[in-house]
Length: 173
Image 1: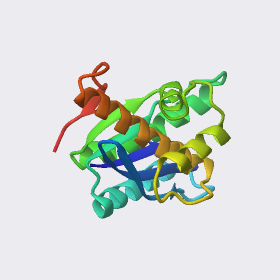
Image 2 (image 1 turned 135 degrees about the horizontal axis):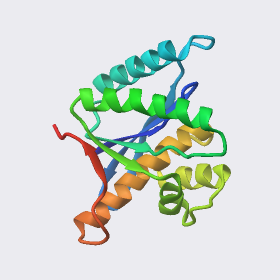
Image 3 (image 1 turned 45 degrees about the horizontal axis):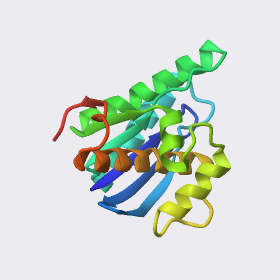
C-alpha cells in the first residue's frame, strides 16, 4: 500500500510517500510543495492545490494521511493553516482518494513513543523506521513521513483486530 503523508503549511507543505506492507515500511520519496513567495493567500492556496494534484497523478497513492491543525495562541496563523489544509483536502477528495487525519501528538506517539517528541526525535525515528530514507531529512518532510507511518501503524493494528477504527474523511476509490 502506498501512503502519502502531508504536513500542511501555507508557505511550505511537506510530503512523504511510503510503501507499507505488514511489518515492513519503505521510503519512496519526500519533498515540499512551495507556493510562490510574496503572492496573496488565494494564489498560494491555488498553487498548493495544483502542486498536490500533480503529485497525486504522478505517484498514485492508495491513501493520504494529513496532520490535523495545531492551534496555538494566535488565531491568524491557525486560520491560514486551516485554509491550506482545505486546499489539500479538496485536492485529495477531488482525486477520489481516502483521507485520514491524525493529531500531531498521536503522530509523535506512534512514531517516537511519546506525544511530546521534539522535531529532531521525529527526524531520527523516521530515518530508523523507513528502509531507504535519506540520511538528512528536513523537518517538514520528516513530519509528513511520520504522518504516513502513523497511518500505516494504525491501519496494520486495525487489520490485526487491535485498536479503534481510524477516523476517516472522504471517499474511497
